[in-house]
Image (cartoon, rainbow over all chains, first blue to last red; front, side):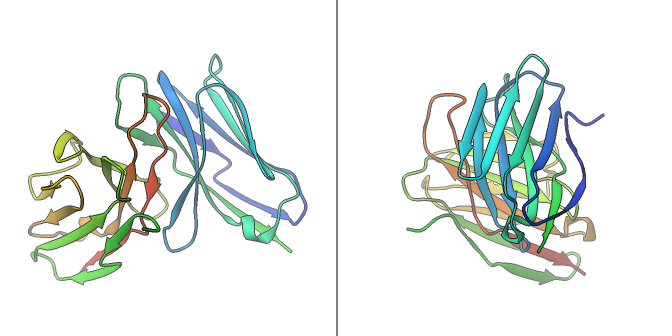
Length: 110
Length: 116
Protein backbone atom coordinates (compact mmCIF):
# COMPACT_ATOMS: atom_id res chain seq x y z
CA UNK A 1 0.00 0.00 0.00
CA UNK A 2 1.37 3.41 -0.94
CA UNK A 3 1.99 5.81 1.92
CA UNK A 4 0.17 8.59 0.06
CA UNK A 5 -2.91 7.83 -1.96
CA UNK A 6 -4.96 10.19 -4.06
CA UNK A 7 -8.42 9.89 -5.49
CA UNK A 8 -9.71 10.05 -8.07
CA UNK A 9 -6.89 9.15 -10.42
CA UNK A 10 -8.61 10.95 -13.29
CA UNK A 11 -11.38 13.52 -13.20
CA UNK A 12 -13.21 15.18 -16.09
CA UNK A 13 -15.73 17.91 -15.35
CA UNK A 14 -17.56 20.75 -17.04
CA UNK A 15 -16.51 24.35 -16.66
CA UNK A 16 -18.04 25.86 -13.55
CA UNK A 17 -18.29 22.65 -11.55
CA UNK A 18 -17.00 22.36 -7.98
CA UNK A 19 -14.02 20.02 -7.90
CA UNK A 20 -12.75 17.93 -4.98
CA UNK A 21 -9.53 15.93 -4.99
CA UNK A 22 -8.70 13.76 -2.00
CA UNK A 23 -5.43 12.69 -0.40
CA UNK A 24 -4.99 10.10 2.33
CA UNK A 25 -1.71 9.21 3.99
CA UNK A 26 -0.60 6.55 6.41
CA UNK A 27 2.50 8.06 8.03
CA UNK A 28 3.03 10.75 10.63
CA UNK A 29 3.63 14.04 8.91
CA UNK A 30 4.84 17.52 9.72
CA UNK A 31 3.33 19.13 6.61
CA UNK A 32 1.32 18.35 3.51
CA UNK A 33 1.76 20.01 0.13
CA UNK A 34 -0.59 20.38 -2.79
CA UNK A 35 1.14 21.00 -6.10
CA UNK A 36 0.03 21.52 -9.66
CA UNK A 37 1.88 20.00 -12.59
CA UNK A 38 1.25 21.23 -16.11
CA UNK A 39 1.84 19.27 -19.32
CA UNK A 40 5.57 19.45 -20.02
CA UNK A 41 6.48 18.92 -16.38
CA UNK A 42 6.42 22.32 -14.69
CA UNK A 43 5.43 21.99 -11.02
CA UNK A 44 3.97 24.81 -8.97
CA UNK A 45 3.43 24.67 -5.24
CA UNK A 46 -0.16 25.59 -4.38
CA UNK A 47 -0.43 25.08 -0.63
CA UNK A 48 1.51 23.85 2.33
CA UNK A 49 -0.63 22.80 5.30
CA UNK A 50 0.05 21.51 8.76
CA UNK A 51 -3.47 22.05 10.09
CA UNK A 52 -6.85 23.53 9.26
CA UNK A 53 -7.68 25.22 6.00
CA UNK A 54 -6.10 27.57 3.48
CA UNK A 55 -7.70 29.51 0.64
CA UNK A 56 -6.11 31.16 -2.37
CA UNK A 57 -8.43 32.54 -5.01
CA UNK A 58 -10.68 29.72 -6.19
CA UNK A 59 -8.56 27.06 -4.50
CA UNK A 60 -9.22 25.74 -1.00
CA UNK A 61 -7.16 23.13 0.83
CA UNK A 62 -8.14 21.42 4.06
CA UNK A 63 -6.41 18.90 6.25
CA UNK A 64 -7.64 16.65 9.05
CA UNK A 65 -4.60 15.44 10.96
CA UNK A 66 -6.54 12.94 13.07
CA UNK A 67 -8.06 11.29 10.01
CA UNK A 68 -4.84 11.64 7.96
CA UNK A 69 -6.76 13.15 5.11
CA UNK A 70 -6.60 16.29 3.01
CA UNK A 71 -8.79 17.69 0.26
CA UNK A 72 -8.18 20.21 -2.48
CA UNK A 73 -11.24 22.03 -3.76
CA UNK A 74 -11.59 24.18 -6.86
CA UNK A 75 -14.62 26.44 -7.09
CA UNK A 76 -16.02 27.70 -10.40
CA UNK A 77 -13.59 25.47 -12.33
CA UNK A 78 -12.16 26.70 -15.61
CA UNK A 79 -10.40 24.92 -18.49
CA UNK A 80 -7.11 26.54 -17.44
CA UNK A 81 -7.35 24.53 -14.20
CA UNK A 82 -6.68 21.41 -16.26
CA UNK A 83 -3.50 19.87 -14.89
CA UNK A 84 -2.24 17.10 -12.66
CA UNK A 85 -2.70 17.85 -8.97
CA UNK A 86 -0.27 16.14 -6.64
CA UNK A 87 -0.38 15.66 -2.89
CA UNK A 88 2.96 15.26 -1.10
CA UNK A 89 3.70 14.83 2.60
CA UNK A 90 6.76 15.51 4.70
CA UNK A 91 7.33 12.68 7.14
CA UNK A 92 7.59 13.75 10.74
CA UNK A 93 10.90 11.89 11.03
CA UNK A 94 12.52 13.58 8.04
CA UNK A 95 13.45 17.19 7.40
CA UNK A 96 13.95 16.63 3.74
CA UNK A 97 11.94 13.99 2.01
CA UNK A 98 8.58 14.54 0.44
CA UNK A 99 6.54 11.42 -0.21
CA UNK A 100 4.40 11.96 -3.25
CA UNK A 101 1.03 10.72 -4.36
CA UNK A 102 0.61 9.57 -7.94
CA UNK A 103 -1.42 12.64 -8.84
CA UNK A 104 -4.94 13.35 -10.06
CA UNK A 105 -5.31 14.30 -13.70
CA UNK A 106 -8.01 16.95 -13.98
CA UNK A 107 -9.61 17.96 -17.27
CA UNK A 108 -12.13 20.80 -17.30
CA UNK A 109 -14.18 20.97 -20.49
CA UNK A 110 -15.55 24.29 -21.71
CA UNK B 1 16.47 35.54 -11.12
CA UNK B 2 13.05 34.30 -12.03
CA UNK B 3 13.19 30.82 -10.60
CA UNK B 4 14.89 27.46 -10.68
CA UNK B 5 16.47 26.64 -14.03
CA UNK B 6 17.62 23.30 -15.41
CA UNK B 7 19.79 22.44 -18.35
CA UNK B 8 19.33 20.75 -20.73
CA UNK B 9 15.56 20.57 -20.99
CA UNK B 10 15.75 17.41 -23.08
CA UNK B 11 18.43 14.78 -23.53
CA UNK B 12 18.46 11.75 -25.77
CA UNK B 13 21.32 9.33 -25.30
CA UNK B 14 22.32 5.79 -26.13
CA UNK B 15 22.42 3.11 -23.49
CA UNK B 16 25.79 2.99 -21.79
CA UNK B 17 26.62 6.67 -22.23
CA UNK B 18 27.11 9.10 -19.37
CA UNK B 19 24.89 12.15 -18.96
CA UNK B 20 25.10 15.21 -16.70
CA UNK B 21 22.31 17.58 -15.80
CA UNK B 22 22.61 20.98 -14.20
CA UNK B 23 20.29 22.80 -11.82
CA UNK B 24 20.55 26.47 -10.86
CA UNK B 25 18.40 27.16 -7.80
CA UNK B 26 16.90 30.46 -6.76
CA UNK B 27 19.91 32.44 -5.59
CA UNK B 28 19.11 32.86 -1.90
CA UNK B 29 17.91 29.28 -1.42
CA UNK B 30 20.29 27.07 0.53
CA UNK B 31 18.34 23.81 0.08
CA UNK B 32 18.33 21.87 -3.18
CA UNK B 33 16.51 18.66 -4.08
CA UNK B 34 16.63 16.24 -7.00
CA UNK B 35 13.61 14.13 -7.93
CA UNK B 36 12.87 11.66 -10.70
CA UNK B 37 9.44 11.27 -12.25
CA UNK B 38 8.34 8.53 -14.60
CA UNK B 39 5.21 8.67 -16.69
CA UNK B 40 2.01 8.52 -14.67
CA UNK B 41 3.80 8.59 -11.33
CA UNK B 42 4.51 11.22 -8.75
CA UNK B 43 8.09 12.42 -8.34
CA UNK B 44 10.47 10.20 -6.36
CA UNK B 45 13.02 11.78 -4.04
CA UNK B 46 16.63 11.19 -5.10
CA UNK B 47 18.84 13.43 -2.98
CA UNK B 48 19.02 16.62 -0.94
CA UNK B 49 21.67 19.27 -0.35
CA UNK B 50 21.88 21.90 2.32
CA UNK B 51 24.44 24.35 0.99
CA UNK B 52 27.24 22.15 -0.38
CA UNK B 53 26.55 19.20 1.92
CA UNK B 54 24.64 16.20 0.56
CA UNK B 55 22.58 15.30 3.60
CA UNK B 56 20.34 12.59 2.30
CA UNK B 57 20.40 10.15 -0.59
CA UNK B 58 17.58 7.81 -1.57
CA UNK B 59 18.12 4.09 -1.87
CA UNK B 60 16.73 4.60 -5.39
CA UNK B 61 20.02 6.25 -6.27
CA UNK B 62 22.29 3.48 -7.46
CA UNK B 63 26.08 3.75 -7.64
CA UNK B 64 25.70 4.96 -11.22
CA UNK B 65 24.13 8.18 -9.95
CA UNK B 66 26.12 10.96 -8.35
CA UNK B 67 25.17 14.50 -7.43
CA UNK B 68 27.29 17.44 -6.41
CA UNK B 69 26.81 20.99 -5.27
CA UNK B 70 30.42 22.12 -4.97
CA UNK B 71 29.96 25.76 -4.00
CA UNK B 72 26.52 25.55 -2.49
CA UNK B 73 24.95 27.18 -5.53
CA UNK B 74 24.29 25.15 -8.70
CA UNK B 75 24.12 21.37 -8.61
CA UNK B 76 24.90 18.63 -11.11
CA UNK B 77 23.39 15.16 -11.37
CA UNK B 78 25.43 12.63 -13.32
CA UNK B 79 24.24 9.25 -14.50
CA UNK B 80 26.95 6.86 -15.64
CA UNK B 81 26.40 3.93 -18.01
CA UNK B 82 22.78 4.91 -18.63
CA UNK B 83 20.13 2.23 -18.88
CA UNK B 84 16.75 2.38 -20.56
CA UNK B 85 15.11 2.37 -17.13
CA UNK B 86 16.77 5.71 -16.40
CA UNK B 87 14.43 7.36 -18.91
CA UNK B 88 12.41 9.84 -16.87
CA UNK B 89 11.93 13.50 -16.05
CA UNK B 90 14.58 14.71 -13.60
CA UNK B 91 13.30 17.55 -11.48
CA UNK B 92 15.25 19.96 -9.33
CA UNK B 93 13.75 22.06 -6.56
CA UNK B 94 15.10 24.60 -4.12
CA UNK B 95 13.84 26.13 -0.92
CA UNK B 96 14.90 28.86 1.48
CA UNK B 97 15.87 28.13 5.03
CA UNK B 98 12.77 27.99 7.21
CA UNK B 99 11.73 26.32 10.39
CA UNK B 100 10.69 22.70 10.00
CA UNK B 101 7.27 22.37 8.42
CA UNK B 102 7.34 25.85 6.96
CA UNK B 103 9.20 25.09 3.76
CA UNK B 104 7.93 25.53 0.22
CA UNK B 105 9.89 23.96 -2.59
CA UNK B 106 10.19 25.75 -5.91
CA UNK B 107 10.57 23.49 -8.89
CA UNK B 108 12.51 23.83 -12.09
CA UNK B 109 11.09 22.84 -15.47
CA UNK B 110 12.85 19.49 -15.41
CA UNK B 111 15.20 17.63 -17.75
CA UNK B 112 13.53 14.91 -19.76
CA UNK B 113 15.92 12.02 -20.41
CA UNK B 114 15.35 9.36 -23.03
CA UNK B 115 17.77 6.44 -23.14
CA UNK B 116 17.64 4.50 -26.37
